[in-house]
Structures are given as structure tokens and as C-alpha cells.
Image (cartoon, rainbow, N blue to C red):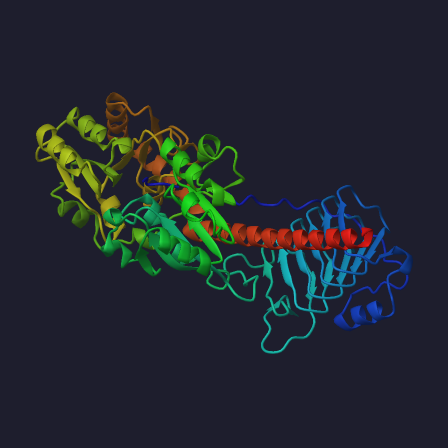
Length: 554
């Protein structure tokens, strides 16, 4: 297990606006629900452009000005090029539509009933999207000035955006400029139910990640209904009590039951899951690769027969572990409430018997071989007496590390499990050392950055995505001498060290919060869920068509 993990949610640049051509005669300037219904009842748009069957259409080039595409029944449409001024797309019934290019000024998209619509490009000024029935709508680009979003009447209270009602039975999620990001509306009438499965639940990185993720998921979109631990010897009931998720310990039968009762399984092991679920494949399974080591790949390959998609917590994890699997990178984020403080700096240091002139080198993480906490102790031993070590963690090497510290730096260290307000531990430090041989996306680095502590770290996992050597941290090779030199450098140049920490804090505040991570998981899981449903419908329609053709041949 590892102390891991951030979703680079790339922004979508706004294309330069273009001047739109006027709509042709008979096309309403602003499609209201009533006008749309009248248009459809009258057979508009032009009958000669209508397709009677449910097609799958891809317009990957630029549709020319004044082009018309009309469908009589439930198509699947992809407009991946730029739809030009005056372009029109009209549908008679329940389509699934993706506009991934930039919809220009004056563009119109009209639907007869209950579509699922995705505008991932930038919706421009005066763009209009109208619906006569319930809808699921996503505007993930920049929401335009004076843009309108119109839906048919629904019963009960209806939320609104820019003065217009949002959503029929389903609400709309509108993100980007002019819209809402922090608290998006649910995109489904009922949330997806998800079970987390892993070999362990202890005070380590995966579990801290899970705690932050569960806290910030929008319960209207995605809900953890249980956490299932398969190895009872690695189950900490005290930590489980801190989770907001019902937790249980179980093996094969518990896993199979969870698969039957959940919409989604989110897993990171054990490797036996592929065999346990081979004859009862879950509806959707997402594997989270928390580390860059061979053990993560072993878990992934063991679970592989039931894995639909992989989340890698850093680009390096994707490169080294997830080859051969469809993968999305979602970097981990920190729940800043985990970093609360209850003591002043002097009080935080005094409780570990550190004085005001001591330089305290901190370590936070699991006491296991790949973390190399012993090198922090060995480096401090090579420094003057006022250099001290604060070791916060838990793990199988605890007795050996305690013995080593007592031999090499007696009276110059403190060792604790770490509970409660973690901000107090970081406040007691002058620098954090994270010198692991391998990582995923080290949460402790993000935590220290958020707390304004300079970081010394090896170039592993997600560290290259966070730290630039001598700009916002110190990157070392990980041998004892490199650690000793880095610590001494920070101690000799306190103003420079504060500058590094300040730059690091900006990066962590911009990219490292758990809420941002949670949105990435929500969006990914819902996209995968929609794709599986659409694939299932397509397969069913294909089988029915083949059966009909076979019947006709006979």
C-alpha cells in the first residue's frame, strides 16, 4: 500500500467567435417549447431531409453554412467538427447528441423528446438549445453570455440558470464561465450506487484518498454505499469508524454480493477478484491504480477480466502500470479539513520536546520498505545536534525504525502514529522528506505544500507533476548524502526555503483539493455508465435486426 496520489481537468479554450448567418425563413429565432412542438407537428424541417430509421451519424468535418440534418427517430449523433453559422440539426425523438466542436453564434439544435446532450465545445453568444421533454444536458465548455437553455414544463420545483428553467426530470450540469462548477446539479434522476473494494483499510495513503473522495462526491450523482475489505488482518476498525461509508470485511461471497447489489465497483485489488467475479461480471468496474510498482500491475492483471476502465493517479503510473487498459489520469486531492490545526507552532513543537532553535525534519507515511524512512534517520544522524526528526506513521517496519533511531539519533527524534489534526504535525516541522523508491501520487507531498512546509522529495510517481527543483521544492536522488545536503541547504537559507514553500502552496491550492478530484471521478463514472448503456442498446438493436433479417431470408 502506498501514500499516494490529483485530475488534471483540462480547460477547454474558447474559440474565437464568428458572425452567424441569419436562419432561413421558417426557422424560429428563439425556439420555445411551444414553437418546437408546432414545428415538429407541421413536419418541419424539410421532409426530404428526414430519415425514417434510427441512424448513427458522424459529422467529423465542418458542416457548411446553411446545412440541414433532420431525423425522424432516435439517432446517435456526433458533430466533432465546428458547426458553422446557420447550421441546423433537428430530431424527432430521443437522440443522443455530442457537439464536441465549437458551436458558433446563431447555431441551433432542436429535439423532439428526452435527449441526452453534450456540448463539450464553447457555446457562443445567442446559442440556443431547446427541448420538449425531460433531458440530461452537459455544457462542459464556456457557458455563453445571454445563452439560453429551455426545457418543457415539468411538475414540481425546477431549478434555473440565467433565468431559465434547468432540466426536465433530470437536471443540467453546466460548467465553465457563466455556469456552475463547485456545486453541479445531478445529471441523473437517481445517483449511481458504488462499492469500494480493496485488500486493506489502515492508516495509509489509499485510505486517506478514499476518505477524501467519499466526503466530496456529490451524493446526487454518485454514492459509496459500502467499503469492503478482503484481508481481515489489514483492517483497522478505528480508522473505519472515521469513514462516512458502511464498512465490512469479507471474501468471495461478500464481493459477489456487492457486485450484484451495486451499479459500480471501484477496486484496487485483491488479484483474486477476476476469478471471484468471472461468472457474475459487475455492471461497471473501475480499477484505481494507486502506485507505479509491480504489485499494482499484479493486482490489475488479476482483476483484469472484470475491469472496464482504469484510473491512474499520475501520468507516470499510467505509463508504467496500465498499458493495455483504457485509462484516465485523475490525480489525487487532499481534504483540507484533514490538515486542521489545534495548536500554535510553539505548542506543536513543544509536545515533541523540540526547541525553537531546532531544525525538524519530518516524515509522514507508511513504515514499509519502499518508503525508505530509514534514510531520513540516517541523514539526520550526519547533521549537527540541533537537527531533529519527527516520524509520523504506521507499518510493519515500526520496531526496526524505532531501534535504528534510538541507536543513531537518541534524544533527537519523536515517533507517533498520527491522528486527529494533521496540521499540528506539519506545523512542528521545518521541512518534509518524502524519499520513496516508488509512489503513485504522494498525498503527503500535497499536504506539506498546503501547510506551507518546504518539501524534499525523490523524483517518483506524481512528484514531477508537482515539484520543480529549486523553484517550489528540492528534488533529490534519495541516497543519504543527497538528503543531508538538501536539509542543510534549507536550514542555511531560511528566506529561500520560505519562498519555495510559498510557491509550492500556490500549486497545491490550485490543483490539489479533493473536491476537484471528486468531480473528476463523478464525470468519468457517469460517462462510462452512459457508454455501457448505449453499447448495450446498440447490441440489442443489432441482435433484433439480425434476427429480423434471418427471418426474412427464411
